[in-house]
Length: 357
Ligand code: GTR
Image 1 (cartoon, helix red, strand yellow):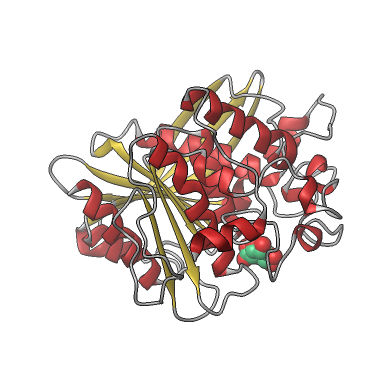
Image 2: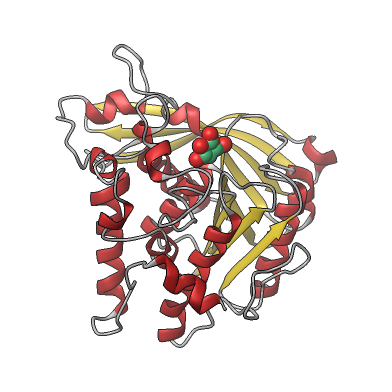
């Protein structure tokens, strides 16, 4: 059944197995950057961190809450944004989550920090708007976008905002690597909705993320674009909506999604053979759970060709009670609407626990 559902979508083959996987993986990333998310105009010349606040009473002392400024230099220009950290008060090392969030609150309605710390995870969270505004760039606004594009021409394949946020996740990962209690082999990137799209891209770009978690990322995230319901490429790239999340080349495909030389299963596959987790919500037809799930099914062949487990699923669409957790790609669809809930976090962390504990 799943095979037929995928065949109907007419999506390009992700890997024919001839070229070595690492070569093909780089090609996938390149296709995604050229046609959708864009290339960064500059790379940092230096990254440094400074602690600006600490609170030892967070979670009754189970974790240290720390605010750190990340200083990102591009030659003479520097941009600074804050990272909010929950550092578990433990002996030894633990997995760390880089959570790309909508707000700086800690805890936050999308970030049940105490429960996550109780489960033995550290958290590094940043507010995506502290990196660059979620809007078309305006002259005179001092954000990372102005620093990146200072003296640079904006081209049809220049980075949109999702690419910039995804790069910021890698800079936050650099901070994790300075922490003695962060296990460098178990770093996780997570995000919801537009930031789920961002988390998938961050995982594709940054191989030091061992687990990549996209929650309700939908259009231009986990969901297959061809024949998707709800939000479409045409809708997401309308001038008045989110065209600035992407590069200009993406916009050119809006009247004919079949002209795309890829589909979103390339984005999932670009993190192979690491772990990818996709979560959907049953009532989130704008994101389209079926298209998100089918994308995992389609990407799975890469893991299988590599001798790994990919997505292990019965030949049917999952029910909300199913945890598709056996393979290297994990999936769940929960009851309810578009949201990053405690249930999502717990089901995802059950998956991570099952792989590392
Ligand atoms: C919607 C957008 C989606 C999704 C969502 C979100 O308005 O159409 O693609 O990203 O926002 O980020 O909450």
